[in-house]
Length: 283
Ligand code: BEZ
Ligand code: FE
Image 1 (cartoon, rainbow, N blue to C red):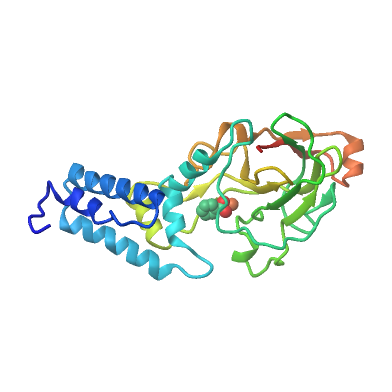
Image 2 (image 1 turned 90 degrees about the vertical axis):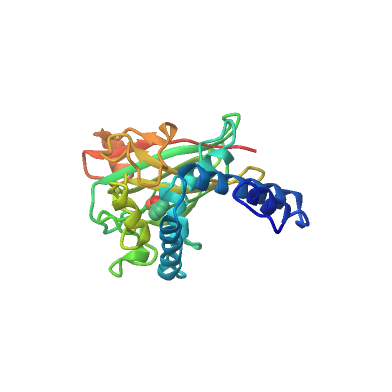
């Protein structure tokens, strides 16, 4: 290895992993080194540019803590998290989308048809649908784990004025696989842009907005758990999500409903927003 030069360095590094403990690790590290070196060669990376990249990673480490992971956010705004989700998506099942940093374990149980909006500001919305298997058969006792931001664009973790159980629940579907709840229509919000990711977005002439969305983790015995999001087709940021989570199949059209029976059943003022979305779980 004494004659390492710009032509031989890549294979020297790859060979240095010959004793790797597992074949998958070896495959991944070999391709990583290959593409990393190919990138540096292709753009003729300068020492100053290399240092700017290292500084970015250093700043990302400095601003990260238990509650904030700037490395995940970097992966999100570069579309890597989204790509990994899509590579995982099952044929026949609902498409996957971002988990994001605001999922918390232990959300309170809400009965099917329950009210989540409570005293939140915002436009009341009825959300309904069914959980089905890959063949379209309803799944009884599937679990939905749900969370959303409030009308101010903040999750409870970001907003001391919100109760820690605000706008999140777990729900178990009935025999017909149905779920339903009332909530408030969420608003678009920005991903954190006061750190190195914000610098990256600004340098790239990009904004930090995400279109409004609901988060769901849907699971059932014998099925693959699904982490996904549901978006509103008429959202102004629908075609420019900062983290590339939007998929055509995850869009809902909001209807302005005037059905008095539904309004009474769910104690909603007329007219109210209504959306329907069915989930399919792969095996
Ligand atoms: C979210 O939707 O909660 C989210 C996703 C990626 C980055 C930041 C927030
Ligand atoms: Fe979110």
